[in-house]
Image (cartoon, rainbow, N blue to C red; front, side):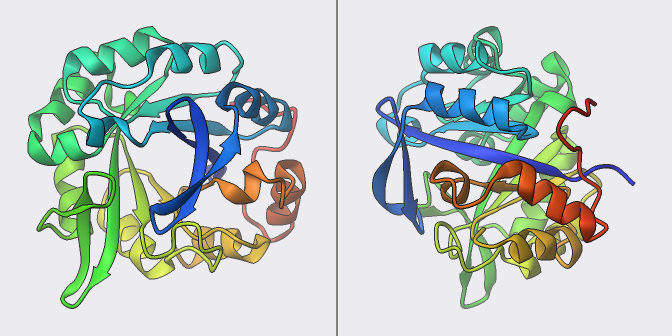
Length: 256
């Protein structure tokens, strides 16, 4: 069985890491380069860096910050936010990112998924899906959680996989920042319905929440922010605890 991954996420706005609840009430969480350095030392499996204000402000991702973070890492780095074209994807790859995450642009222009995958490979192409519960069921929301996209998460994830995405980053807006647990129902629905790995995001609070999303949620990876940023959990300790629950983890000192 493949090892499950723990991923730290840096949501960056105007040069600083921020964290909020349900995509709002953002608070300063530190310097992105310093946090990246710490995660690299602690043995996190991957790092995701998202410029959360780029799309709303209509600008490209923060290339200088990505480059500075990449210099600190010996683990895979995914960068996203404001990726609207193949040229934008090329810029973050050239800055040192290993993978590119697209969200709103992919909904508006699905062929961008194929363009990135054909240029850099599916393994470098991540489609981020933000979803929340609506009266008719889960729905995809774009533009940093501000605009309903009129699509169901599973349907959109399957379409993205067909277009060449190699991974889905699935965030529950309802659980974001709440520390009440991942939305395992949402995660399992998408994980069971697509042939590519799914990263669960939104709601991490306890060790048990991670175990639940890997088992009941069928996630391939679990992403968290505040519980790692503010050191509520030690990455090595969490990995060891998950290993005792028969969840395969890449422990400190092991390599791909």
